[in-house]
Structures are given as structure tokens and as C-alpha cells.
Image (cartoon, rainbow, N blue to C red):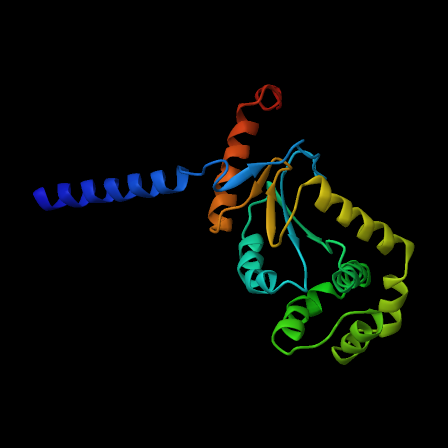
Length: 214
């Protein structure tokens, strides 16, 4: 009986410690407010944006972790990736490559390999020709890729991505933004993101619109 009580108390104490640790998400240390808050692209859902670059070694390191996390997100969350250039021409070419591969349907096929080629194999994928040549080796139709790469739609999306990085105040990558309001700045990015998602979920549940919806 005493043993069972001790076990129960220990379990309760462990849950309390875990709750305190996870609830301790602090503005200025773990996140900053996006000023002004930005509109999300999927009304009714909580949006998580990952700003990144294929040219960024920190993004390459973070990619497997955030990809696994994103795959496990519940249905009320939408995960959006936004490549950035910060005015660097090679990174700008990789921004266009991301949207071109998205347009041709080849992104999932080479997404991981692109990080690996740049950061593990030392490939100099810095312009359309070098990227297209590498993609051809991966079984991607280089002509289709080039057509998409030079399309108006890819130009528009690339310009929009650069504008978004400014609107959200992104100064470094990888960078997560939760629902257009919170920019994660702490080192434990995914734990902080989880807590901010819960904060947004609770806010949505307590809003007058939620209370009156069927």
C-alpha cells in the first residue's frame, strides 16, 4: 500500500515537473512577437512556417528533425516551408529551385538529397545550370525543371518568399513562426513550437467565434 502510494506520488511529481518545464516558454528568451502579426494562408488552422535555405548548414542539420515533427502534426496544423535568400544570389537560385521542383512534382524526390549534396558532398549548386545538371543525375527531367525555374509563377513565389522574410522579421535560419504571431528564437525550437501551438489552440477554443460555431 505504502509502495503504491509512493509510486503514485512519484508519478504525479514527475508529471508536475514536466508540466512546469514545458509551460516555461518566455517571450524574449524562447520567442519574440511578430510585429505586426501576419495573416495566415489557411484560415481555420494553426499555421507553422519554417523559413530555411538549402545553402544553410544549420537548416541541413535541422531538416531531418523538423521533417519528422511536421509529419506527425495533427490535422488542425498546416506546415509551410518558405525558402529565403537574404539577398545572396546563390541562395536565391536555390529559392527558385525549391519552387520549380514543387511545380514539377519532384520536390519530395530530391529534398533530402539536395541538402546532402551541398553540405556533405560539397556540390557547388549555385546557379540554374549546376542545379539542373545535378537534378538530371537524380532522374529529374532537366528541361521541365528549367522551364519551371524560369517561369513567371516561380519568379512571383520567389519574390513573395523574400518579402515574407522581411515582413516576419527573419534575420537567420532555420526559423519557425507560429500562426503569424510568434517567432521561435530559443534553441529548443520544436518544444517551444509545440507550446506556442497549444497556446494558439487554447486561444482559438476560447474565442467567441469558436463558442458560437456548430
